Image 1 (cartoon, one colour):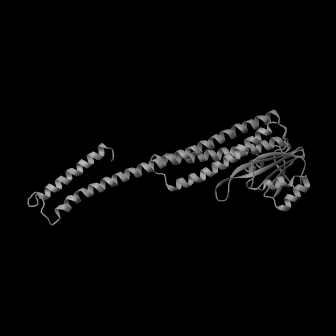
Image 2 (tube, rainbow, N blue to C red; image 1 turned 180 degrees about the horizontal axis):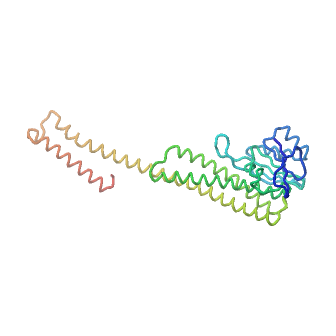
Image 3 (cartoon, rainbow, N blue to C red; image 1 turned 90 degrees about the vertical axis):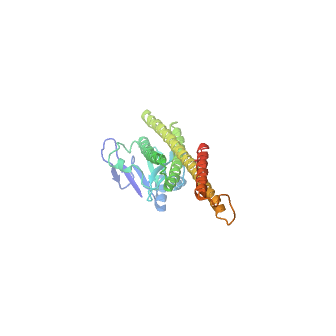
Length: 309
């Protein structure tokens, strides 16, 4: 799908054009092979870069060829399975062109088209930075939600209410956070190169936007690392608690086995068909039962003093 959007500083609404007009934003989403060939031919683009933009595993980077900059980043979104994933986004920027190429709908596109964000397609550099800012904000939102989910699971740790599903969720969260890190870290390197001004002319206001994004991405990276550390701590704490509970259970079962075995020793002896001390006495049963009871009490006292129970 190829669309052409145009908006100047003087207009309030975004116009969708039928054909390309200088100063318009060329929006490309999940293009077919025929559309890719048409874009390459019409705008004299590098076909390899367009093919890279359609590679789901393409990483953020910055290239410059034929007086045009090719800026690759990755943005986060929820797929049809409601999983958080990242996909590549390519900016093609030059004196006469601004094009975005992505596999899925660009996040925040509706905010641009509905007038929630004040922009102009004629200000190409600023529009690129505004789109990057939207992407950075979405990372921030997703990471904040993930932090809240981790805190919720951590609160259940106190009541020993963590279930197996929580650990399955942890695995998925770790995958999401690691994917965020693999996208945010090279994106920051790309933004630092943009600040040099060789790939895109930036005014003072634009440089402030880039620096703010750098700071925001650094905070997002720290939040990802902090969340990953929290998950490891929760997992280790739960493992320690489980091991402690298992050891305590084994101790209790061992003491219970000894308590059950002691009476059986004496009852077994007096059940044998041989002469035994006091077997003809009337108090023999009470004596044996009392003696075994004293042994059980002594065993329990010993276990408590040794902190076995």
